[in-house]
Length: 424
Image (cartoon, rainbow, N blue to C red):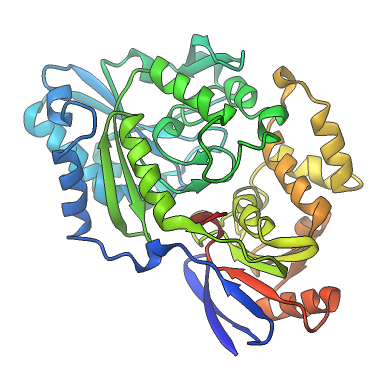
């Protein structure tokens, strides 16, 4: 019996898979990567050697004000490590600069006070100016151009008015932008709702290039790059983390060049060869990415890449924060089938995208070909069932159901962290 640890909320579930069923365990090499130095040393080393850019210190010298964009509560960016370093280095050369921290909520809900404390630590939460971007507040955004796709580009007014704009984030495989990090802090991070929806249209989501680990010819990435340039995103600090959410590498400098280098590194670590199976088991990497069903679709796409058509995907995800988007839930729950959802979405024009459409489009795509069993003892089972998935309180129950569907001899591929791999 193979014993495999799978992230679930803030812990690890140890699951048993019969040896004769197990086809493969697919994991990013990031889990075994041995970092050189402490997290602080790694970050400072990257800032000391910026890629394609002047140093952070040179950029802030003589400036009156600036904005630092950071990720929201759904992303495991280790801001307790990175933000103090950024603030210290900035204020060492410019003690009087006005710094505002802007949380890139994108289309998500605002961060709560408690989430800010958890993310930044008490000191920063108490003494820095931290602002949630509100994508649906039309008074807080300004139009700055037209995206290559034709959509209107509206960005956070505060970010556009400040003398200097930089961002922090992390790089991991992303299920339709190719990779997270870099330009994503601007679009969707601090863009208006209408801009996010134009960028996330059904045509782009359906593109063969809008896939995990793919940037070349990716129409979504192309829009995002344009948005970052228009925002004059001058500098980024992007980190790569392991399964324990610890920093193993950092990349700093030009928003495009430093991000590209980071993506190359992640691709080297995260690429795994697909091993097709009747049953695919995965997770969303635990907290904070498995707080809701909306985010959990990301991990499901890794399982989709290895699951045979008609197979079963077992998704281990806490979903303690519910579905994660009312439009996402309603469009799944109110449809008779995933096929109905897909048919309706593909008839929706680029400028007619509705909230959360991209997420229920991808979930419907997965559900049209596979049975999904979501494992959680932290959410409402009826919510899961109404979204055309099966529910199990325990992993053992889910595996039992999967064997009932595919047979006792079904082969199994396990991807312990579905958001951490690029399946080739």
